[in-house]
Image 1 (cartoon, rainbow, N blue to C red):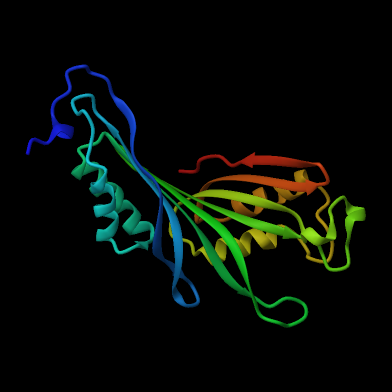
Image 2 (spheres, rainbow, N blue to C red):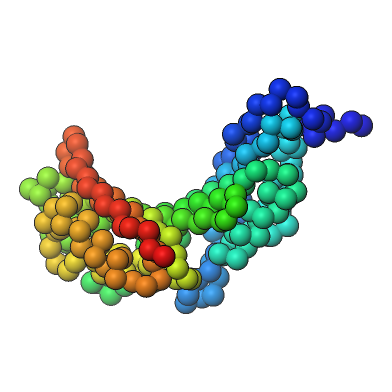
Length: 237
């Protein structure tokens, strides 16, 4: 049978992105305390096709994903991108996965519980590879504080912070979460403002040699509206 997708296309029109998205897939991610953690990710895989191809076989994306058995770390991310680019003869390859990450927490009452953090990894490979890790960390209302602070007590959240980083070298997800939570300030009171939280987190991230670039977005949820501030760190060589 003739491979129509691989036939030469003489129209000289580059397809910027072609691929598969919202694949629900069981994955294994590194866990500092337990070595690995099982979770379920949403995966997007796509490539930039040169004009000489009409398209690509979509099943090849999932075939490549299956070869790595859902194991994701900095090395496997690069290898998946490399195989996508080579096997699909693409100009560039892109991989995005989003997954919940769980950490055991011991709150003030001493009971152990699980805190959920939303994580995303965005990888691209053209001439060189690029990987960005994004983590969302909730900012809770201290116990006993209520809607007089502009936030209904029942929601339990002052807001959240989203931090995106590029690395100079490997860093554990747990360590990055701890760095962010330490930068939020003491847990006995609410943050002063989105601007102050943003600046404080920027200082913490800028001082860590493992981090090459960062972007911080802090959002405060209020009744009927929200406020936010953002800060981006310089690209360090």
